[in-house]
Image (tube, rainbow, N blue to C red; front, side):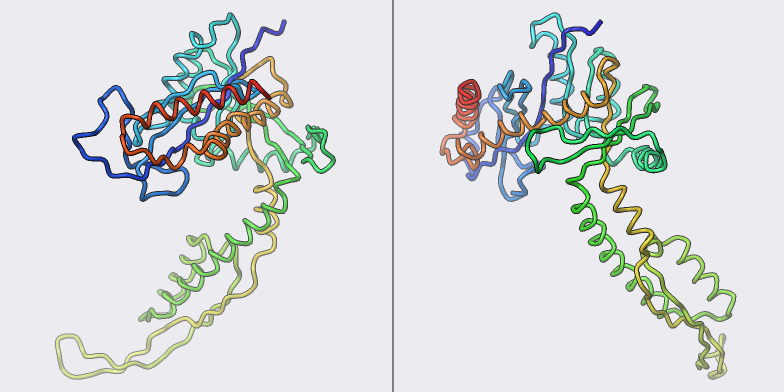
Amino acid sequence: MTRKLAEVMTDFISANTESSPDPSRLPPPAVARPAYGHNKDGHKDCKQLVVGNVARPDGIPIQVDVNDGNFDDTVWSHRTLRELPGLLQAPAKVLFVADCKAIQQKTLDLLYTEDIWFVSRLPNTFKVGRSVKLRALAAADWTALGRLANEPKSSTYDIWETKETIQDHTVRLIVVKSSALVNKARAKVLARQATLGVRWDREAKHLHRKFFHCEVDAQKAWTEWQTTSAAWKWWTGTGELKSVERRHRREGGGGLETVTEWYWEITRGVGNSETVKQETLLESLFVLIANAPEHSAKDALMAYKRQTAVEQDHHILKGPLGVAPLLLKDPDKITPDVYLVSMAVLIWQVMQ
């Protein structure tokens, strides 16, 4: 029997400040302090506050936290997870939906300790993600979902699911193929290939400048480069081993001597089309990590897509309502201003 489900979305943003307050005017410890931190808007020159938001699937905020500018979003996620049951005040199972930055080892442990269902995107830092994608591409039992929205130009989706053990926890991994990612994937892969082409040339130039005392050492250097450099996966190339007579001073003195040395003449060839093809397929996929046993893979994907609700709240917060940048002279008033604008977001969403 399906239990009542309380679904919540979370997100974490930067709210920039553009001021240098007098240290004597800094806010008391109970008020969030502007500070330099990892700025999600790219404004590294600005101090900031960081705002955590918990929202319903319809975008209505449930809780807003304003924190110091250098506050760790992982710490906020853990604190929020512990507070969720009391925050919702309902005898329901909690489904925690967050972006990939929320999924770390300690977070997974806490989710299972607190018995919270979750759906998130598997971070690229998990090596299992690539292997699961490769298995999915080789599988024949994909499920075609088609369009999940009513718009005629909306993306189509296909899914493939498996189970894996990650950090002693059995999780569901749902590989998702999105039509919207295909063109973006190819452009991203070609850009990566171009970057590695520059790397290939740089490494080739470095090897070309080396002279070897024997042919065997030169061959070993060529083989080592081919087997250890990632650039060779993306590009082909040829090398011609040549010899040259060079004069060196004898060891221990005694004048000059002529010795035969070896070096490589190297030419980069064409790109590896098979690598481009495979990497484009992999980039057109993303992997969801979940543990809700009563959720179908389609339900998990739709829940993850509703993450845009809380992102829309932050778009309103930082766009039409203009909470960033903050142009307040008195730092004591920055935190109250963020809460005030968050109340406006709440009212706006209720009106919708």
